Length: 242
Ligand code: ZN
Image 1 (tube, protein in one colour):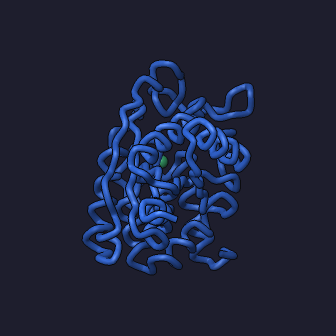
Image 2: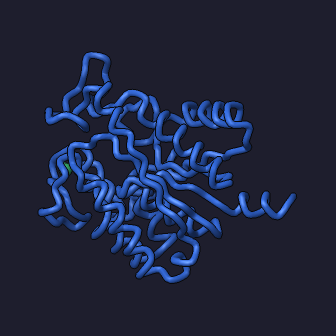
């Protein structure tokens, strides 16, 4: 293995949105790899709060976790606003979240994770990074087909064939539920990381940063808030198996 290969093998690029899941994945990567970069996407989200929150989370990690500060490298923000122009979803348009006839919520943005991983692969290629980390999850997901384990395995194969690399896509949350995601954060970074996730990350579909609950900020009633709150309550009750 050459020195460059060894560096690549210790480097990870985390798909980081500023939400609870991707923040937990970022901590997971910082715990394992000596060099970690982050990538985020502006895809015309209804709430720009997501894009400001992710910078707040990165800043909080740097100030509260000195060991991780040295490992945390560049942040990349990719403009994918064209995605909102070709899709009609509740995440990019001002419409209520409802179930569609095909059984998927209209918060599903077709092709989103496929695009994200493709751009992450392109950045990782340029930055000589081997490991891609994403917070997708099959366990309590909203039925999004691009969060499935098989989709990730197919993307890993497609990226490696299409870019002539040996990328490894890591999905630390794939088989755990929201309570276990809280438990994983506690295991990696203790109470300090739980504090950071509660205070700084953002999950709410309605972009609400004015209501503070025991599990963090949000409207408290959208599907994302309900999932986060329910997971937190089960985590506190100790029903998690992580
Ligand atoms: Zn909400």
